[in-house]
Length: 219
Image (cartoon, rainbow, N blue to C red; front, side, top):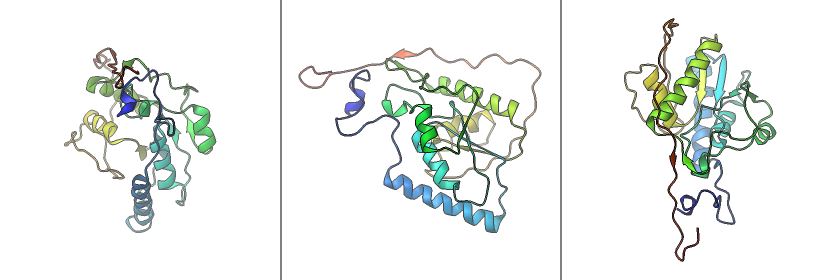
């Protein structure tokens, strides 16, 4: 894949940009099926309507949340959370669009306080997250939600690779479960405030990205 050759210089092939890739036609079909699931569940199963919706800042998640729920008989104004995102690495597909781009596409979406215009987590020269790093950022996300959201029913729309550390952190019996695209996972969480200050989750520092050249030495 050319996009891994030199992250400082390549963000496409001259025709297509690889930054923050959007849903493929297959992905759009899966999301459409998810929309049907919610319509049927609200009507027949009487599934509780989330009191708050959270969505990650990447294009695929933003589109998934919109298509899934925008035409449901509910108030839908999700909050965009910076840390509710796939692992951060040098691939430009992990480099989110600016805040203004999100606002123009999804004017009904709100943003958490401090959400920046540009993606300040993605770095061209470093692989930011390993498993420990993703776990640490996900814990920060959950700590923030549990500290600020008083709702009983909340919804996260995010990537499968982020769902796994969430399941691990909340003590799910199958934390390594690999969700299928467009799958809904209901979980019941009993949260209790811990008055003892826990030590920070250890995470390895960023590592320099490895690059190579095209045949002939072109980076």
